[in-house]
Image (cartoon, rainbow, N blue to C red; front, top):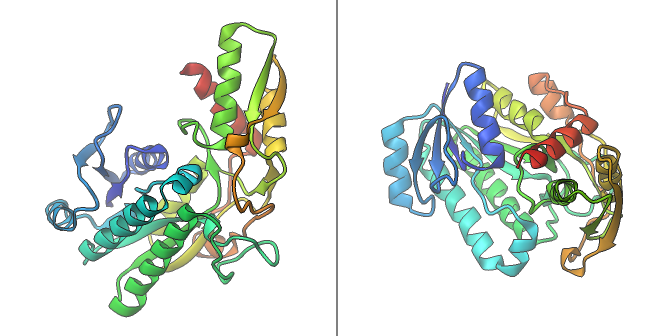
Length: 302
């Protein structure tokens, strides 16, 4: 496949491009100018420019599109709700509108479900997003469903729960902790105090390399629709810190940082990947502990 990836220079986008290349497919990246070099064809494009998106997509002529580009930080979305909503929804609208003949995968978030009345959460769960980022992704998911239902476009809507791994920025909890530990190791101390938010919330974590493998399997032939991508297990923030501490020679303690506390926190959520597995055979393969080791190793290398 010739697959156009929006946001290809980002965390999941780079992993997806590598997975596609390894599988014999041809990735083409579009989005903001990458901050570091990429090893595949890349076109700089503002996805909020509808005419520019139509022209670029028409020129590239992809058979499939993986729309990953988004403002993805929950904390930043609270600081600029309008910007998050406009950027994420406008870019999705322009991608769907320009993708007349292509299969489109709209990369969404398990955060759109909000507080679950039961666990695990499947694709029939109502959408109750609890922050501006999740609202923007719920709106993009609904928009993708509209294009599929009303306009008969081939749209796959993924709802990936928390994913992490090497290369992720420290806007996100695992990477934030790993960076603090790696910096303390570099500085040669015997202990580190990691600044944290609330340690009690539980989330469903999947390795980003497993997540992009699901994207490829879905693009290779799954029926249009919504698909959860998840591990079916939830772990607390305290579990993450303990797992990282086990991989470090330092004495790891924590200190609550009020700036890291989130509003309207969902305390526990985990998903069901039964639909995805039935459609593609996908199962998570990389153990949580391995991803923890790989993430910490990546930050040490930085």
